[in-house]
Image (cartoon, rainbow, N blue to C red; front, side, top):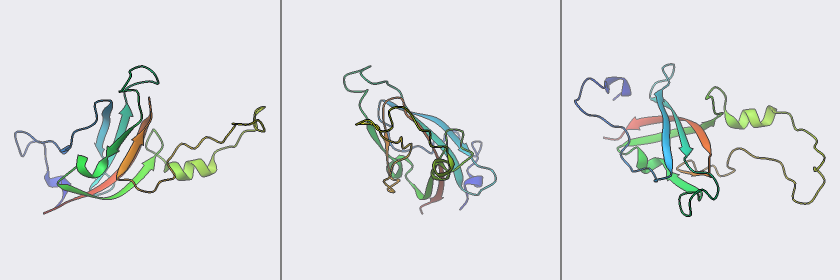
Length: 140
C-alpha cells in the first residue's frame, strides 16, 4: 500500500491527521517528499509566546503517533527549519562562538534539538517551530 495511491481526488474528503492537535499548536507544513516514498515534511509551530496566555503559553507535548493513526510512523528525523539538513548534523558542524559571558555562571551552550530520542512525543516551547521528515506506512 502506497501513499501515492491516496490521491486527494480519489475520495470526496480525506485527512491524514486523525488525532487532535493541542490548542496552542499549528500544523504549518504537511508536504510529501517526492524523492522518497511514503516520506513527508512536517512542520509544527507553537502559537503563543512566553506569558502571552496563562495556559496556552506553556510548553506542550505533541503525540506524533496518535496524530496520524491509522498510519504507522516508521522513522522521524528532525530537520533544520528549512527542511534541507538533518538538525543533529547541522548542530555538529555549526561554529561555536566565544562570548563575553561564556565563563559566567548560568551561561550554557544552546541546544536546538531534544536529547530525547523518543520521537513519538515532541515538545514545543513557546514560539517554537520544528521541522521533521517522517516516514509512514499504512496499518492494515
